[in-house]
Image (tube, rainbow over all chains, first blue to last red; front, top):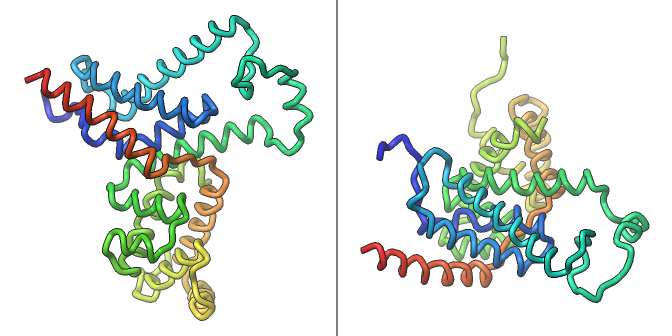
Length: 186
Length: 90
């Protein structure tokens, strides 16, 4: 294999991609548990078909393409179980009845479909950009910004000073801004 | 021509304060210092503007993440399979 080709590093998958894949999945299946299962299946399927990886796509893209198929399979499965053509994204139990469309329309506090779609895509884009940072940077940025963990707690966990932390946050923010710039920060 | 100067140490400080401010962790005197610096430094003005936009983007995005427990479960599940497949390949 030539070095210019993409390679797979399964031992890093969970750390590097699970949040990215999770964000992508949960916006499509709307259920934490199902999303976790689908990601787990995706990683395992990836592991099994590593031999078929030709190195033409980046690892992340390759995993997403597996995940997409898993999501489609999941929808097929629940639809055939219910044997109905109507899709009710927020009804998970079979005995839940009601007019889904009407409920959505009457719910004025809900964001518009477009808005929601954009925010979901943005979430995926952010995780994609985070994946390009180095691991420690990404992890610290995520803890500070997304999980809202106290500065002190993070410093203790990584054994760094608060000025170290702010330097890392600064680099992460700069990198993230330039990664998001083209599509989101104009 | 561009009249921007190279970043000085006061720019570095300003950048850091600006970052802290995004998390509401800048002190009052720090914020004042930043204000003054922004009056004279266009480079930092640009950074501040971009940084604010990034903050609001992060706020608007639907970000879901696995908690520690969930990630651990995923890892354990995956690594047991991973080791098995390594073993089978040998």
